[in-house]
Amino acid sequence: MYKKISLRDTEIEELIELENQRQEDYVELIASENYVSEDVLKAAGSCLTNKYGEGYPGKRYYGGCEYVDGIETIAQERAKKLFDVKYANVQPYSGSVANAAIFLSLLKPNDVVLGLDLSCGGHLSHGYKISFSGIFYNATTYFLDQNGHLDYDEIEKRALEVKPKLIICGYSNYSQIIDFERFSQIAKKVNAYLLADISHISGPIIAKLHPSPSPYADVIMTTTHKTLRGTRGAIIMTNNEELAKKIDRAVFPGYQGGPLFHQIAAKAVSFYEALQPEFIEYQKQLLVNSKAFCQTFINKGAKVISGLTQNHLFSIDVKTTYGLTGKQCEDILHTLNITINKNSIPFDTEKPTTTSGIRLGTAAMTSRGFKEDEFIIIANLIDKALREPENLILHNVIRKEIVKLTHMFPIVRKYIEK
Ligand code: DSN
Image (cartoon, rainbow, N blue to C red):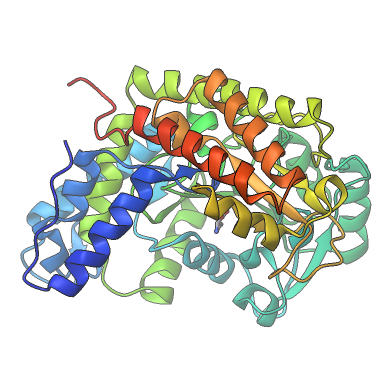
């Protein structure tokens, strides 16, 4: 049960409560968000935030680390078990910092990196010109084909042409299955490292509903707060001892200072939850929901990028479908108590702050108990609203239906019985 936050600082108290109410009252469709359990929140809000401990378990630069050593070791062991890997670094503060540390451990400045173009679903930290990855490294890109799918032969040709030291697969906005084995063949052919950034699909990978990169990638990175349903942060994994040492040095002292032990403990708690059978059921429902949600838009005639989704997310070309920009859709849906994000679509002619697309995901609302029926209702309501963007009377009716649904499915605070 949620307990109201009570602080002496009433300004912050009020804003936290307003945010809590917003989270309750809105249908959350941002593909990268989720709701953590009460146990994860407790660990993240614990006394561990007081502790310094640069270094790693048993090798710290500070005293008094006997308990945080235990916590970090448990987090590492659980991560290794979840992803079937030999080494895990659980300290990264975020996915972007984790990717920066991976670059530092594998590359020299100006080395060639090959990642998916941002508009096709790549991430800023995979080589975008204004991120560290595009500023300090020689970033090159591959693209999706006309159907919005990865074209492995084209990627191989591109790799032979640019001769990268690092190839990145795993994306922010790609709804199809990734063939990690094929990527590793390409990487081996050009003598490049392969990084699998599985931030979005780590949940389905744990549940064996998506192939694992563990046998194929040199390094695996995932954030911990998307389909994995943990606290904010990231982990880096590998099966190679030499790389593991380099990654540890790149995380600390390369990029980071003191580990955030409260976050490491919260990661460990979410890994514990992810090791339970309930988590597998959640991932199965997540994918069933996503397909039903996506298929409803397809049935309505919406242009869905890459066709029917195979994971928890998909994006819609809203310019072609509704004659609206992504930003306009984000704003309209916000007035209906639905949170989404605008997203570039392949070869988008709009700026990233405007976009021709929106991205939708089912991770958060599946955690609240939505099944196919609720997602079909939501898809129909979204489609109706966007087809009549100025019909405020209709929008008012839709908003009431949305709020009713959010009240029927309050945020869940406990995902496992024990
Ligand atoms: N910002 C995250 C997302 O929304 O996918 C990736 O970092």
